[in-house]
Length: 260
Image (cartoon, rainbow, N blue to C red; front, side, top):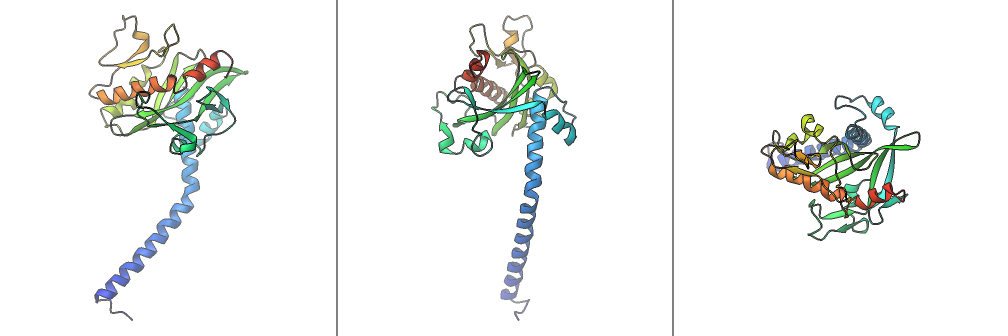
């Protein structure tokens, strides 16, 4: 038996302790994975509903969220054709699909205005319908912020050009500055804004400073975040990207024409 006071004994005890801890941590991770995945799915539904204005930010009740989400239809869009597809995004979400070469494409730098590097071919969208009529559509969006990617949802009214809501469920922005993207007062500014001009081109911007309510472009503008120029620019860029030709632009045109 090794002497516990010897170097060999110390190393042996340390090795056994490491193995025991590794087994405990690995077992806990495997056992908790289904619950983590369920919680992540519930959180995604909650954020979809919040962006769509179907629940408020104080709602955390799982049953309420699940019940409310039954009014939402999840469909998939092939961004290459701008039409619905029955094929779910490989990897289960746009984020994972964007890392798979066969399920995404690398964007030329002049088209990668949201700085996402690769754009997934297929993305999910969420339809809120009543009596078979589209009420709102909720689009997943993402793009570079100050310290990392921002992930959120943009909801449009059934005219496909009026913002119903915007929210981010994951970002690495600086608390108190760029983190104000989560401020309900700032998010409320988006409601009612028009994202396309009369010619159908994307026309929505996060400006530096405050919007002049008397300006003819006020309906296409949102106040910038004070002290967070790069975050404001990131939000502006990602919204414009996903509404544009490389994002959901062609799909929204097809949907409006009844050809999606």
